[in-house]
Image 1 (tube, rainbow, N blue to C red):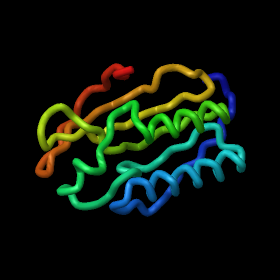
Image 2 (cartoon, rainbow, N blue to C red; image 1 turned 120 degrees about the vertical axis):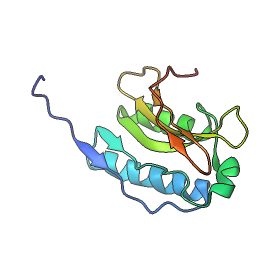
Image 3 (cartoon, helix red, strand yellow; image 1 turned 90 degrees about the vertical axis):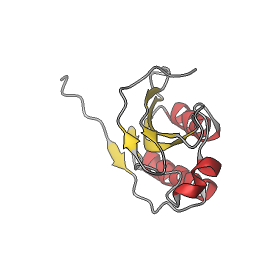
Image 4 (cartoon, helix red, strand yellow; image 1 turned 45 degrees about the vertical axis):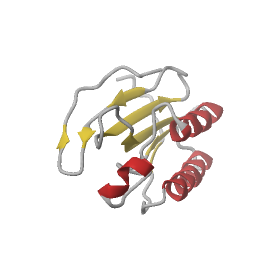
Length: 134
């Protein structure tokens, strides 16, 4: 450890079943955290959708995709790191989705670090971290 201080923000929000509303709310809270000096912002698990599993297919998206691209732009424009606790990611398997954690390191401008867990309506299995698909 270098003894360097980092200002961290933990974003709390009440996610619901509308991904656009959830993402917009999270971005507003990230911007507030940045205004208060945060250099690393942590979002909660399933920040983009928290609702019935029957709607996973409509809520899931690719990574990179609309949400991660928006968050990457925000992180890079402010030089902060954003850790998406997890979000629903699409999968090639029918009725299977990833519960994916993504770290966007704005200051380093490196590829996002991604951890995927396979989720279905009846189970969730842990998976080891994988390379970014970009």
